[in-house]
Length: 294
Image (cartoon, rainbow, N blue to C red; front, side, top):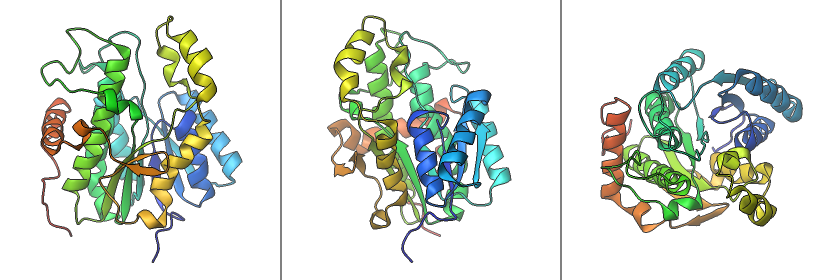
């Protein structure tokens, strides 16, 4: 049977605003059971009410999680496993940027921790549920900014000098590498993993930009941004398109399948990032490569 999201359970992180909120609306309208994840209780509850009203679906719920906290991510995963017997779609969308270098409670640089380590940890904690629900899809929201990204395993936290754009690009490179490596490790198990640049979207993510950069963003760049609704369509497409059944380990820019940056295609680098990430979130190097399908 062709892939259809009707009746399938989907988890969307960063769902209290922007792309995540709009993706939740679109998935709910298609008949999916949507679990929205947000950080702020009041904001997430307001988004939940909005999604229910706009989609006309009552199969929408919410959970809370601060992706800057590994303990909170573990609590989220436990709640998902407790409340849902199946998970067919995971949209890793939560993210942010910081104008100045910040450390999380876990002692990690915040942009890398939230944007890369957060989805890495959550996906690993939910991977058994995804596999048992197969066919299933993991969609990780990346950015064209990954093309400017670099990885220095000796200074992942930018102790030798922080830049908002360097930190963001590094985290997005991490997203593309992670999605591809996840696909390799889940080969033959019925779970696909792809990443997507949804376009330059008019969201609140750049509210934390330095004061000198804000006029440039507002006056020069923002007029060319697309709406969060339009950006969400490109994310939802990866979760819903029947013709993408079995397509995995790929990178999309909007609706187009393209080659990511050369670094993002480096299999050895992806393996190293996986191992370093597993260490940073205190997991074994889960999902061994070449694990046979079930």
